[in-house]
Length: 164
Image (tube, rainbow, N blue to C red):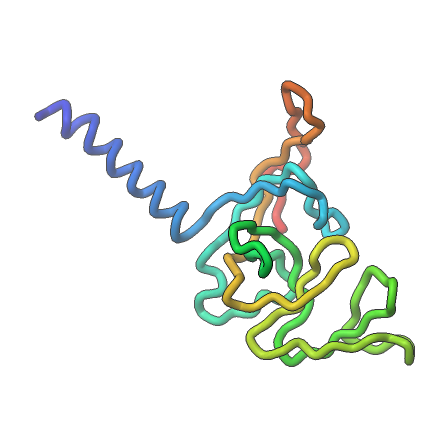
């Protein structure tokens, strides 16, 4: 009984705390592709995500957001949120950036519908994402591994605990 109280019970409690934190509070996602590279994230980054960030209705504007893809609910990706519901966004055909102000008369326009956000999906693809698909706010790159498919992957030292 003393062995159980000394070793097994503390291990069990620690395991429960870790599983609870990872499930409900903070989790880590691995970026497998470099679609967010223009915004500062790289393939191989391990990013910590706060799952509680948007539960109180806070806006994710100009933040890195983890969200499930609409066409593949099992896949989670991280990109920057660019516009909120009701915002009007403009972009020039073929351009890689959007704007909240019209620059030319040929700019295309979209109004972000209620309950959605305008997310950057890769370097030149944008779209609406439902608030229901948001997982949480990505807040730090815990570490990064150069994914060059070698036997021993190398670490990117300058990206350890980089705030987003």
